Length: 628
View 1 (cartoon, rainbow, N blue to C red):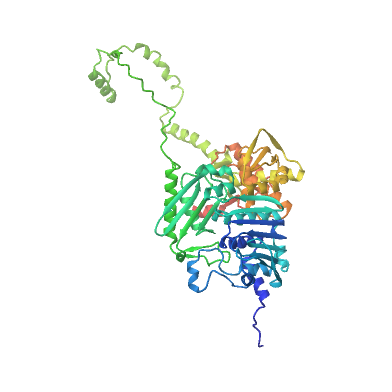
View 2 (view 1 turned 90 degrees about the horizontal axis):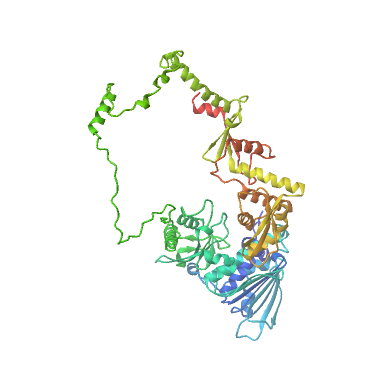
């Protein structure tokens, strides 16, 4: 059994490495754009077809490569960034592993045209499946032009796992945005299927954010700036009133490299404590500059997860920086002196002499006489009134009418009877909410913390989450409308215009037909603007802007393929926004209707997102709690 372990062929090893570095078309665009930035390009153009599955073209005007370097760039672990191990702790560029081009060439048809400024001719290299097919001189522009065709053509399993074009396009846009935000001094453009999606001129960070995210975000940004010995923080955070219910516009960059960092995200959220609407997340574009020696960017192949040497100190500095900016721009709560009840102070007139106030005084008032009357009352005595109250004592005999015919109200028999008469309705109320036969509408339910509805069942005490229950009811109403092929919609008397960025506009156009099937009719899309013509009937708790914004946020990172699932996901997203909020006080009739409608649903136990709606505290558990 010798010779069991053997070295893998280079082509197979490259395909295995490609699985870590190149996960989808967006990964190719990320690597090529970062290489172009490292090459000193001032203009980068990205062209895709069918969401990058058939064509990805990245053109830059960077430094370009010599013929030998162009050929070596496609070898594994070939890099210009590292010469020895200590160079790993002083990295200021994007790519450094030397795996990107080798991995791309292993799973696609690749063409490279490149020329340096000082050369008259460039080089044209064609590679397929890690095999060089041709290499020849060519006349081309300065810089590099990569053409990637038929991604994963020789790995059919990986190609089958790619999502539909709209989903892959969203990932491409996400990667494009991250590189573009980190490098505002570089002009960038993105074209998909001959349709321009982004055309970003060079400028500063604020201009890049506005050009990318839409003009509506321009007035919602608050600058932050902090410079310490450990770290330098700059960028922008969003105003509290502009916060959204879902994530999407949150970006961290360290040394101009995009990163994900949940721990620092909590630092941002803590800085907004008590000034945000419930369940909302502010936008932020935060740039951190630190010594490369205290950052480990080598913990993930895609280099999006980063580890700091002292994360707690950075957490506190970031938190304090955001709090300072929010306070400086009057975003923190302040005392409101503009009250409704205002005191009017008259203007002084020096020529007017005010008249003396007229005070009524009783010259016969004797305070000692009042004290004598109180003492007489306390000790059971009587005093003669100082004034005549004759008219007030007329008809005093009527106070004792009926006392002769009834037993004494102060006797023990009457006390016992009175207690029983008061206890009886209380007992009836308790029994009516617990018995199966004696259930009486208004006494069957009660509400706890304006969040849960309690009711008695045979097996114990049922607890219902009111928001999730309403969400299930609304969802099944939408699905029933879809099954009938008609959805009730309400025309808007004044159509509402909503502004979105290029990424959201792409998703709106993709989902327009599905939204119409659910009663949400949208007009023709203009530049960064859509018009809402009608909304689903019965959605009084949510505006069209909140509804569409929530749907787009849910679909930003969605992985839905089947058309049926698309409609279900949209219906679930709409139901989540249209459901009653926590904290709403429900009457007995409303709780009863919620209960009846919930158990008329096909799946009453779980919300559309799979969360529990009903929990039962059984009789055995109740008896244990009372040691029965």
